[in-house]
Amino acid sequence: MKRYVGFDVAQKECGLCIVDDAGTILFEGTFVTDPDEIIGMIASAVKDVEKIVHESGPLSTWLTRELVNTRTGQARRTRGLH
Image 1 (cartoon, rainbow, N blue to C red):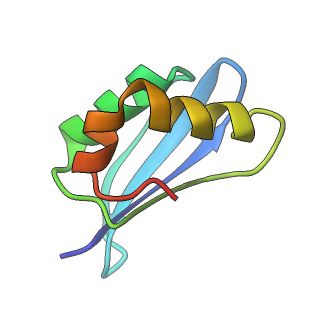
Image 2: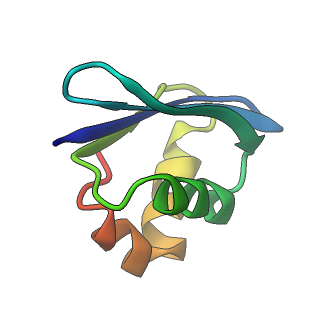
């Protein structure tokens, strides 16, 4: 089963949703806009992720770079940070 992660980014808090390939919601919640928190939340909710996406906006360049750089090992385990 493929799992997909999407989140809405705001300066202080993000909304996160994880769905499977049938569209079933596996997790939905909010958390602090912190790359370590984001990767930790995803890793604790599901073991394998097909794709992670977030909105483009003022924080997107910073957030993408931090998600990849600060937790490269965990990002690899979740398969793809796109």
